Length: 204
Image (tube, rainbow, N blue to C red):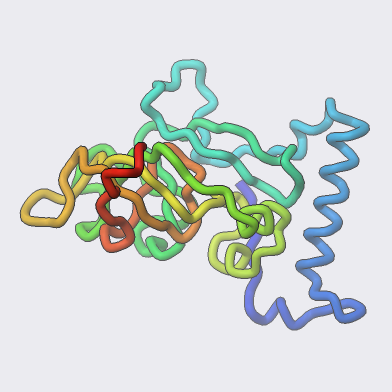
C-alpha cells in the first residue's frame, strides 16, 4: 500500500503562502467529493486497499475490524475493513514494535511489548481532530503516520492480552484510555500506562 508522509523539511514549501500539503489535501478532497457525487461507480478506485486487509471470504468474526481512512476526503473515504488474523491497530508511539497504524500478527503474549496490552475496544470517541485527520490536514498525523491511518484517540473496553506476572492489568479488566491514533478499531495494542480502570458508572 502507498504511505503518504510529510517531513519537516517539506513543510517549508508553500504556494501563495499556503503549505503544499494543505493544497494537496484540498485537491484530494475535491476529487473525492466530485467522484462520490457524480461518478459513484468510480469511488472504489479511490478506496485503496492496504496490505494488512483480509480480502478472503473466510474471515473470522474475531479478527480486528477498523474504520479505514486510506486517503484524504469526506465521509465517503471511510469504510469498515477486516484485518488479517492477529493484526491490531496501534499508535505511533509503538513504531519500534511495528510501523503504525498496524501491529504485526499477534498470536501469543510474546508478540507484544512487555509494557503493553491488547484491548478489545467497545467504544471510541469522535472528535473534530478526527475530521481534520480524514481531510488530510492534521499535521502530526501526516508526519508520524501518514495514509493509511486509523483515526481516533479515546478507547474503552476490556483487556484481551496482558503480560503475565504482577503487572497492573489482567485479562478481562474493564479499562478506558488513549492511543496516539488507532482508536477506530475493535482491537488496539497500546502501552499499559495509557489506560486506567473503567469507573463503575461507565457502562461499556
